[in-house]
Image 1 (spheres, rainbow, N blue to C red):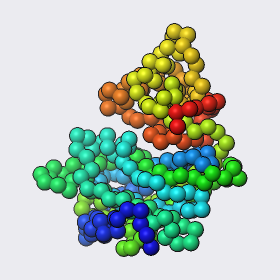
Image 2 (tube, rainbow, N blue to C red; image 1 turned 45 degrees about the vertical axis):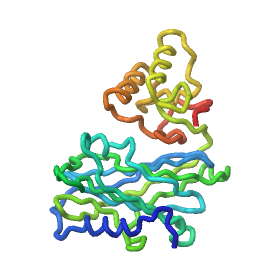
Image 3 (cartoon, one colour; image 1 turned 180 degrees about the horizontal axis):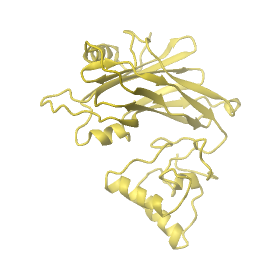
Image 4 (cartoon, one colour; image 1 turned 90 degrees about the horizontal axis):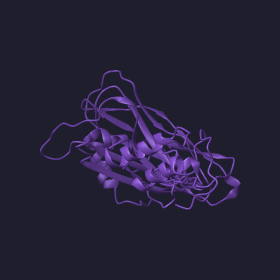
Length: 280
């Protein structure tokens, strides 16, 4: 068995640190993989969100996938609600681990985090909330046109790995096994794009807000990918998107919804369309 990361030892330590004795009170605790879409041969960004009533001190997330379709690339907390809500503190201990072929036709990846791990201990926690994004798992999809019109599942998997890892939330000093909702990846025939990048330079910054303002008010060129121009994901390309980008870049505003930060295909709810995008 091989691992992309030398993290099984770290994962064992993390499991021990998270596995506090004693059951927690009955709560609403749900881990969910958000559904997404992708183009064959493109990047799949799969986001795991959490719904919980009480403050969280840490978590473990473990997913399995069809390794004949997907190849695991990375996992990150960048551009998540977790980072925003923990600010000005952060995740003080984290470790990824993965096995590209944990079983025939099956890949596996996991990530664990403890928020308050280093002295001085400030007891910072993630406040309760609904569908707060925790991590983004990134995969490369097989470049097979036959995948268009099909889907594959990212499964929140318990008991895989060595030692076996579980999907766990650490709440009030106890390890809680949340309810799990798996997510699908739908393969479509559509250009890949990065939301919030209407000028297609591969970056999401002030230049994109200026591009939108020029388009809307000064007869500037129209975005070739309207889906990328809808930075807030509301299926409109208007002034609110320019304001959204300014808030994100300069006032700690929320990041654009998927596909972001990695390129990806438009979600199933997209109605704007993307004729062309050259920023991936």
